[in-house]
Length: 209
Ligand SMILES: Nc1ncnc2c1ncn2[C@@H]1O[C@H](COP(=O)(O)OP(=O)(O)OP(=O)(O)O)[C@@H](O)[C@H]1O
Ligand SMILES: O=P(O)(O)OC[C@H]1O[C@H](OP(=O)(O)OP(=O)(O)O)[C@H](O)[C@@H]1O
Image 1: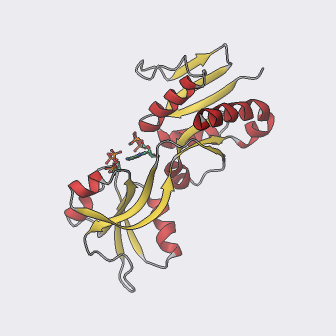
Image 2: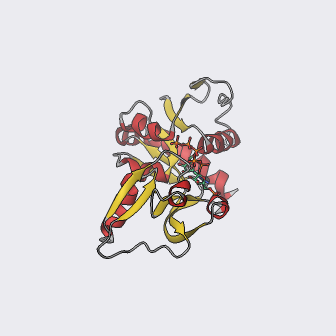
């Protein structure tokens, strides 16, 4: 049997992926508190690596790992050449445009200032709607930007809405729904098709159960 390698995202998604893989009897070797970056399961012939979400896509695209588990947001931002093969149904949240109450996002001749961790997604979204924007790329605490006059609005993930509420912001427009996805290297998908399908089958049965 061929080995399968899977890249897990650090953070929220990795923790949930670890739970799911343990539930389907595959993740016993994963110990996310150990500081180890490689976990080997020689019984089921699966090796896992543990990397930043945006790097998951790189490892899968380059064929270092056959599969990866990452948020749809990271896939959309990365413009990558991988197959998205299964919606894992966890890590659910949405992309929204948010701002101070009453802020307008479509300003005919004006440039809208948009703060975000996701410049590519924001550019594409507003470009399709013919709204000119200036991107202010931030790496976190994006909700601060409209409060201090750095931007007119933000494009960010919203789950409970608590962060927006706590900062006096509100959703102006919802963009897309997000959840964790299983992605595959294109060549691996062809050459390890049966093993990959077996993993998908177990994941699917776990979700239905
Ligand atoms: N409320 C949420 N806020 C942010 N991300 C969420 C939320 N709910 C689910 N997610 C998913 O979790 C992923 C981010 O996880 P986490 O915040 O732990 O990573 P991170 O370390 O902040 O990522 P990065 O280092 O790339 O910024 C997102 O890509 C998204 O798919
Ligand atoms: O709707 P909520 O449930 O409040 O969740 C959304 C918040 O969570 C994420 O931030 P994260 O915790 O990853 O911190 P960050 O600002 O450093 O990215 C996201 O960027 C929002 O700020």
